[in-house]
Amino acid sequence: MRFDAVSIFPEMFRALTGHGVTRRAFDSGLARLHLWNPRDFTDDPHRAVDDKPYGGGPGMVMSAPPLAAAIRRARADRADGAPVVLLSPQGERLDDAMVRRTAQGEGVIFLCGRYHGVDQRVIEAEVDSEWSLGDYVLSGGELAAMAVMDAVLRHLPGVVGNADSVSADSFAGGLLDHPHYTRPEDFAGRRAPAVLLGGDHEQVRRWRLEQAQERTRRLRPDLWNIHQTKTKTSE
Ligand code: 9D3
Image 1 (cartoon, helix red, strand yellow):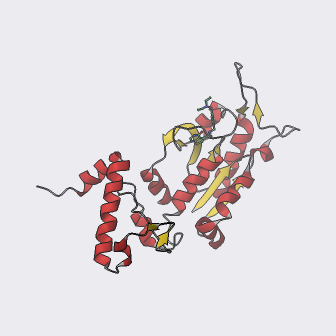
Image 2 (image 1 turned 90 degrees about the vertical axis):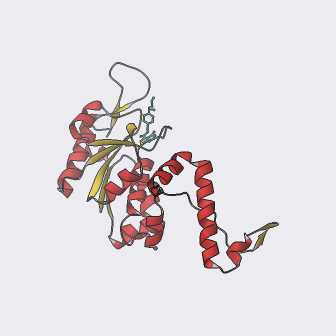
Image 3 (image 1 turned 90 degrees about the horizontal axis):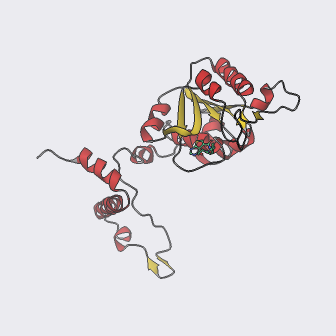
């Protein structure tokens, strides 16, 4: 899996490549990340990548020429036809199905916006899809691109230690997790549930399933309805 990211803050990506299971994915070569800084693609002596909006108003706009040049360089460098995805508040809301589809492909070129937006002509000329994390405002696309990569990498064989936990992490009609406990048995007067200490694995399995069902019904009725539709037996 190869990712490319066009970003004026390439150092931010150390959060993904420098820690935990995602670090191991990059260190082992299972995944690669190529960073392209639009500042390296300006002919402006001040290396500016933003400018005032035509028509006036507050904030700055990312200018088209350096962004387009960086994207074209990334496209040429990988030459596999990977899609260019802009992370933006106008995008399609990312979900489990999009993550799984992305994990089946060769990778993505992410365009990370900053300031108040990206010149619309770059989007029309160079961008294949536009994705959002949800309806709240971030300061730019970098954290969103890292969230997508993190979620996609978890689906590659060998990235997460236990393959069972990946398939169990389903959000497509799956259940929420059951609660977890570890030592000590008594924490500040709160005891771990007795059933988990008893050693009866069938009882433990049933208790965890009930907990997961109760939580999903109470906290996520939307997921619960999908789950019930999917697991309903014909009568
Ligand atoms: C004034 C209108 N704002 C849009 C709601 C302007 C604006 C705010 C924040 C434009 C860009 C941004 C930066 N956000 C992202 O780049 C972004 C994002 C987000 O803000 N929320 C959820 N998902 C994403 S993906 C990229």
